[in-house]
Amino acid sequence: MKRLTILGIAIAGMVTAMPASAQELGINPVRIEMVGNTRAAIVTVRNTSDAPVNLQVRAMDWQQVDGKESFTPSDMLMASPPMAALAPGETQVVRLNVDGLPPGDVEKAFRLVLDQIPTVTPTEGTGMRIKLRVLLPVFVLPKGKASPDLHWAATRSDQGLILTATNNGTRHDRLIHMKVTVGTAAPIEVPSSNSAYILSSGSQSWTIVGVPAGAQSLHISSDGDFGAVNADVPITP
Image 1 (tube, helix red, strand yellow):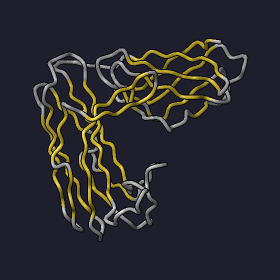
Image 2 (tube, helix red, strand yellow):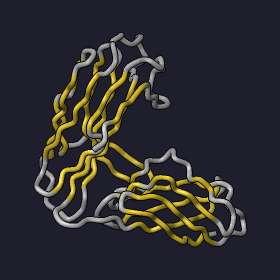
Image 3 (cartoon, rainbow, N blue to C red):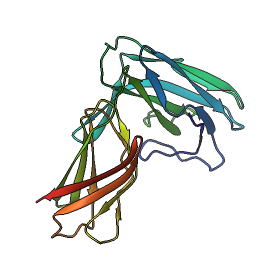
Image 4 (cartoon, one colour):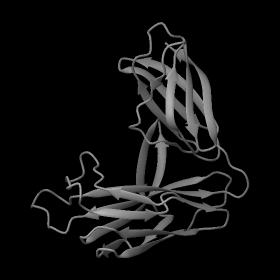
């Protein structure tokens, strides 16, 4: 797995702004996979800045319902320690364990949430502030072969064309560089605000603007975790 360095990430609506030279974390790996009977993993977090960092660590069940993502505290994925204080240059190992997950042939998805908690006590009434939030995907894979199986739908709405991908397979896919083409027109870039992951038994939806009113179908192209994705999708009025 690649190492991820995160500098001053801001999540709209829940983050206090930070100077460009503020807290920096090195995280490895950035995606965790447990295969077969393996039910444990570690994540290494290093404070590469010159200031102390306080972290809250939480484990979440990850689901996608009706094209929207949801996160709820997990009873199966355990993360330890739940809190960590890292001095400049210090490294913290976060240990993950999955317990109570029955055997099956479908991948189970979680998110490990790392929140940086400011050292300054928040003003009364403002609640806990979060400077930096990182969500790491955690997958528990079944034994044997598991693969995604994407099905597409496109319907018109007042906001534009609603493109939905549903995964009927046993494993997630991750789509990047996704484009929509109508006839011979130039490709339309699909907004990247959504998560790139489409979980097993899950779905993702995107709103596409600029599709001609008379178009009856479109072509989707994307890079996926398991190879190129290409599909011709009829448009439902």
